[in-house]
Amino acid sequence: MNNLIIDKLNAKLDITPFELKQIFKSFKNNSGNKSEIKSFFDALNKKGPTTAEFSGIVLCLAEGVDINSPFKIGKSAIENIVLDENFKFFDISFVVDIISSCCGLSVFRCKFDDELKKLRSFDSLNHFGLNEINLTSEINKNFKKTNFFYVKIPSCSRGYDNVYETAKKHKRNSIIPNALKLINPFGVTNQTIGVCSKEDAQRYAECALLLGNKNTVSFCHDDSMPLVSPEGDTYICEAWRNKIFSYTLSSDVLGIKQSPLSDIMCENINESCEIILDVLKNKSKVAQKNTVILNSALSLYISKCTPSLSEGIKLATKVIEDGSALKKFNQIKRAYKKYIF
Image 1 (cartoon, rainbow, N blue to C red):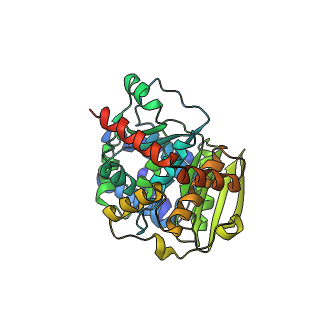
Image 2 (image 1 turned 90 degrees about the horizontal axis):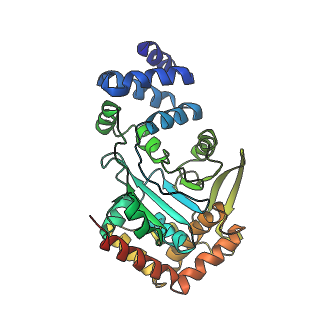
Image 3 (image 1 turned 180 degrees about the vertical axis):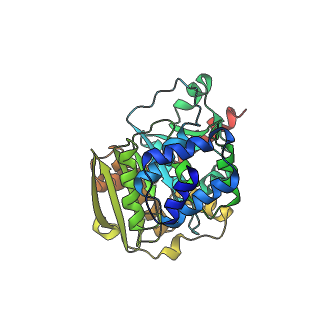
């Protein structure tokens, strides 16, 4: 059966949801051999997964997630995801998380597997001493007031050890790492997803709808970079109420002067964290601050914290300039350093 499915993919034919479930069922509990698993993902990657195929993989992998927490997530929660972090910009999404939590949103960052999901944002968190926590009833009380949850998820690979091990050895295949990022174990209803092409922006917006997440926005700058950019145009796909709305956004339309991308670049994690602190202290370059404001505005808007992007820009600007964002950052640092186990 598996060979037939792999042959079908090699012939550039899409597979059905039933076939996908069958092959993952054979992979589960390590019953699938590693060469067969590699052949499957190589063929799927070469063909290019459809939205339905990718969504199906996310759902299959989600079966391996084991969460035992009484924590209830309300509507005012956000998960900001970047699907490709290979660009040499400072860690914009980390500052966006701080500003989002400062504005009353519960922010979630879920860490699964160190090898597969080693993101730059985790480097930023660890640089500032924010180690991931295991979510328990006791910890919930301590961290709830911060609105910032950097959570270690146990047993993500339960039953799929061979799939994960194979993915680690073949990192050029991005299907598994990106599927992990979209598992959304806490069921956060608001998501922003930075991608690297207009095609991906459309695909992941459609994927969000198939996964039942009806309030998601995916975006890319100039068909190449996963951010709302201070230079040029940003393509946005907004999934809302079972529909997808696509449009192009330019910073100057929102009243923010355009700046070159070179102004937000950095060489390493230390320089990135220096820029993060400068932004929070309202001492950064204009382009660095504006980039954070633009991306934060999208997060605040999609989560319905503000009624429009323009209002999101005003709110994000306010919390940086009045010191609220820096105060929130220091509150989060105190909480995580106090309750590290």
